[in-house]
Length: 403
Image 1: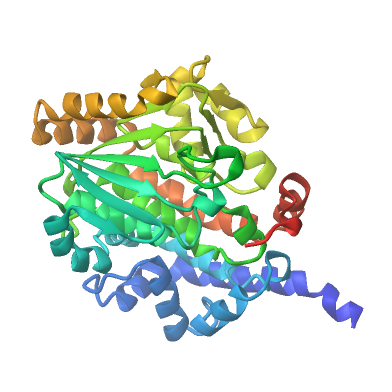
Image 2: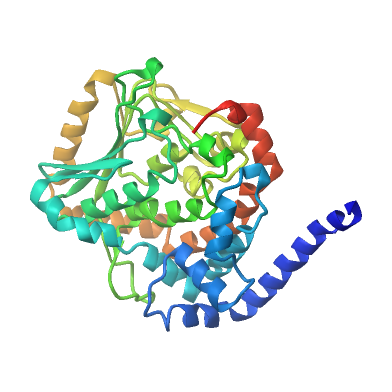
């Protein structure tokens, strides 16, 4: 039996190679077939399931993913790697990849269903997040107090719906993202912008691989690029419904929370707030930070942050490269109000136009598409690597924590 088991890695490598050979040759035709000539928008996970139904063995089925979700990370069978390979090849195609990105930038169905009520009440309780309209601003508050506002499968959908509502409401001119108050004894009554990925749920196998793609193609990219129009016109300049965004970073912005600072138009940080990317200790790719962080801090500091765990602290050099304002913790509310007034005083059209012009020069859609093609494949192997399990146990004592 041991001899048979020793062949499994080789069989897996052979199967992955066969999938990639097929996708290199047929990905555009396959994408056209699944999306009915690009008339049927399918988000990343639904696209994977549609491929599984049409081409058995190319990607895992719903049942296989459901079974995998019941296993701890160390016990998973690795079927999600096929999703990573599939999405990587879709994104690598200029034609299919740009359409998938366009699809992921469309407003969610839940947001469309909630919009009328939100416009009337100005409040939407989404569970893992809450949205409130106050004057010309829409406040998105991440709420996962038990886990110090970590992101996971219980918050990602809520955050995306919240971003959609802010972008869809014509009375809102600027979005503000902030962490809710937490109930941990050490931080009682404090706001935390975010503690990154919920590593306990990751270790226990509750976070699927596609979480990483959905997050960065979904609500994070919507903050950066806005909502796409109904028609996909890749030959034209980016035309999206977008607004300016402010981040209020308090206590700390770790991992994914730090990544969010890279897509904000203005970052207000409470003095002493810790800003860092624990990618080295986790063993995964920190979203789109390898693409975006060098624009803010330069290549050398970005490498130190991502590869060696360099931490930034608001109020101390070189954290000023990540922050626009550093204020005392009790002055954050006033700073937010002042910045809302400053950003909305010259009009939304002018602000969105300048924002779009800056983005075209910094991160054209094609650059982002190519990056995400690489991310989709590499993150799949990182997510299912034994090294990730070891890192979680060694650095985070994940095996001793409860959900």
